[in-house]
Image 1 (spheres, protein in one colour):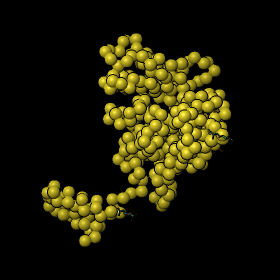
Image 2 (tube, helix red, strand yellow):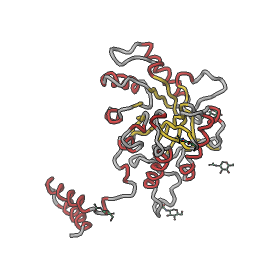
Image 3 (cartoon, protein in one colour):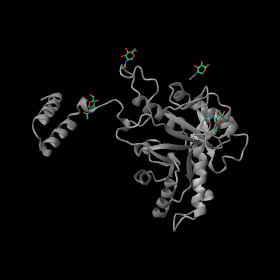
Image 4 (cartoon, rainbow, N blue to C red):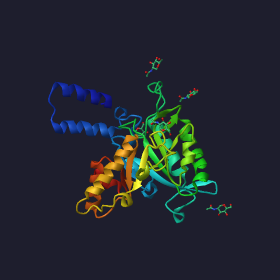
Length: 309
Ligand SMILES: *[C@@H]1O[C@H](CO)[C@@H](O)[C@H](O)[C@H]1NC(C)=O
Ligand SMILES: *[C@@H]1O[C@H](CO)[C@@H](O)[C@H](O)[C@H]1NC(C)=O
Ligand SMILES: *[C@@H]1O[C@H](CO)[C@@H](O)[C@H](O)[C@H]1NC(C)=O
Ligand SMILES: *[C@@H]1O[C@H](CO)[C@@H](O)[C@H](O)[C@H]1NC(C)=O
Ligand SMILES: *[C@@H]1O[C@H](CO)[C@@H](O)[C@H](O)[C@H]1NC(C)=O
């Protein structure tokens, strides 16, 4: 019996009589084993993965950079880049660099491939104007790509902008243009040595600036808002310091609230990095307080633990 017939037969039978669960399971198994086209759709690469507001700290440490994070639904990844010999290498320190591990090979090319799968070109998509993001369950959720510039900012920004060209060309980058913020599949944010002036003067702007969460007001010549900084970050240990054991003090809790409120008032999402990693109970206690007080991104080294949190 052909599979289409099996499926139709199943539906008809299903409508006519109450099937027993074993019979239904048998039908499901048959269909699954058949490799039926009825069970396949084009944008299956991230099927069933629900995106989460988790930031994959030092993403290139994972078994497979980018893909491991995506498999957990992590919606923000961070790559440290070094501009050496006209090439952007990715790694935490010089000793971790290899000729093969570049920003292009680990991030740009895989993203192009994934987004090509999520954006099939056919009669059904002919009129679609904004591209789908990497998450099949939530195609409007952008992936945030934090680019932590490790080498001099002014000389590293131009090659980063150039490396993004294949993504830019296909309108995959969130862009601030003509006074309008157009959200797309990937929001690139510079951090580390990223030069603030260099980002401010981009027009159109498709690389944004990771704002200093603890000092958003300190520089009168810079207005941090969502058109410059979709995210603001600070070192949790320095800004708050509670180790997750015992109770957080009122002053510390108040400081989390104040920083989050300041960011939110500007349309900016807040992230605390360097939160305690261990003991696990302390890690979770800190995550819980941050989430409860409105911090938007959960900074994580252990993606599996964070995705279950
Ligand atoms: C399922 O069918 C597709 C398309 O016909 C084919 O490319 C693929 O190899 C098949 N997979 C299996 C496991 O038979
Ligand atoms: C950079 O280029 C120089 C000259 O070609 C070469 O000697 C050196 O090994 C290169 N360094 C790296 C890290 O590739
Ligand atoms: C796309 O737009 C054209 C022209 O308006 C229309 O004829 C066609 O049905 C649309 N296709 C889809 C899939 O909506
Ligand atoms: C921005 O404005 C220019 C000049 O008015 C116009 O040509 C261009 O299409 C606009 N771009 C977008 C994305 O709105
Ligand atoms: C963001 O700040 C700039 C000044 O740097 C200002 O021109 C712009 O209107 C602000 N936009 C929003 C949405 O607050």
